[in-house]
Length: 94
Image 1 (cartoon, helix red, strand yellow):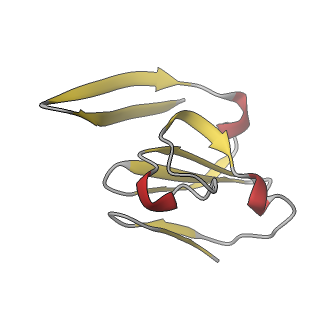
Image 2 (tube, rainbow, N blue to C red):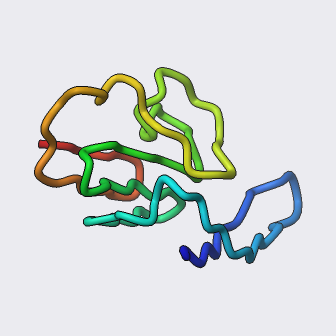
């Protein structure tokens, strides 16, 4: 189970989203890194999931769209990642 507390900046207001998500793919999570408004998860199988604020392409999806549920990042499929790190407006993987 992953408890998510995030927010969406909307013109002239801030909307808080507080939800519990339990995607089956994340049951084997081995590392979670949180930026200011986004999260990256690496599973024991080497899968990488991202969600949150997508501005500047920091989620690794190839777009700037926000993701409200953990979404597998296809560009990392078949790669052996050891660690991910999130900052305010970036993510790094190696």
